Image (cartoon, rainbow, N blue to C red):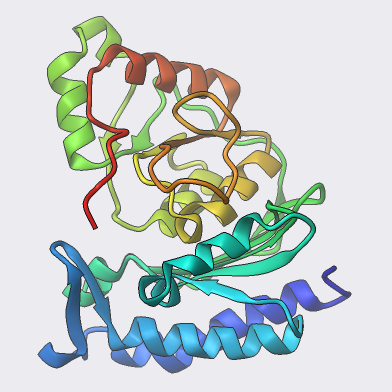
Length: 278
């Protein structure tokens, strides 16, 4: 589906979008440029402008393939149905992953793009904007970070990971000392794209999320699996971009790391699977 050069065309579009819509606005937002979609979930003028630019550019790369963007889904949740259509394709876009960081002036944000066909992620791109690092993957053809192929991921013991503050607090509270020692340092970056880049870089071994928004995870899950890792839902089924948004996802550098994280998750009693209110 992607022709010769299309992989780089998407990467160039993402860098152009970052340069035009994100970088000039970083630490330059006015109060009226930021609003809350719901309590604790913000959006900025940069999110909207970047999504529009990406959608326009992707339409030129693959004409007729629809774009499912985070902000467009906010206006029309029915767009999510495009992801799971048998035999059909769509782009999934997160124009500004880590919006809360961006709005607060913290330099941890990314652009994420992926291509889905027949409900399977077949291409993924993550641009770590502040550090100008890009990861790219094609299903069955591997993953690269800054052009260098990644074959196998580093394995630190005990595995260090990215989890939310509430999850870390419950692990620390509920797990026995022996169980807690199965996992190393736990912290969030509040930017899934940057977290996936750090896993690919060997700086962390896993991430765990209760919500499985496809614009956050479809590209990164493909990349980690192409590098020899795994991405599963909390129930053990392989992660797929279509379906519910609250099935949970564990992405791990190796099967051994995955087993450690699942053991810790199963030992703690947490309301991780209950849907969040809209």
